[in-house]
Image (tube, rainbow, N blue to C red; front, side, top):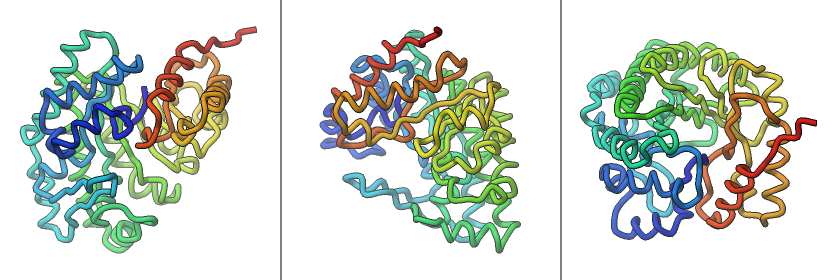
Length: 324
């Protein structure tokens, strides 16, 4: 399967966006379910990741979230005080019931054809959106909070961990076979900061999600320096981006944890010869190792040709491991 396998590169999605906003689609279970299934039917991917957004539970807590049109980014109402953290503590899964209804519809429609993948933002990445009011290059406001007000940081991360835990468990109850945790911005941290400010919350989160009876994929970008720590934090599979050689990632992680990744999404803008070469290079390094999931290193880009996505999926399916 591919991250952001439902997105602006699909003509069906672009047509729908002419009539509905992104959040309107997310909150329409029947429509989001149809979009979720589309890549399975169109390209033959091996997993159906639910169409939603990591900020859905944040909006449900009462924070203003704006997905800017045309891929312009995300704007989030800033978290400023202890009272704002109280808003996070008010979260209940009832406020995001449309996500779980969509999962139930997808589960019924697929009838076991492929696994259903739920997802959530990891606490640190959600904290970045809340503290920065969106995303910035270095997340300096987040770091300033971590370093200068440990009490407030711990309360924020505790509250976000609870939100993500409840949201993830409810997705599993609705039928999700796997939960992917997106820690898209954690790569701005040093290994020391990750261990001190993030790892305790990720350990608790992964451990408690797994009690619901599902697999967990723990994904981050720019994670080469914290890969071993991510494994220690938990997850059945560690998702990596293209900035680290997948062979080296195996050496760091070892054989007890799976790996997902890690083709650069920009390679899908190239010709099919290059796509095949790059995919083969990754597959040759993974060989017949158990626990490997082919994926991109991040989401499919908006200007990606559909025929290239189909070619990639078909090539990966046709690849045969050389056991000689």
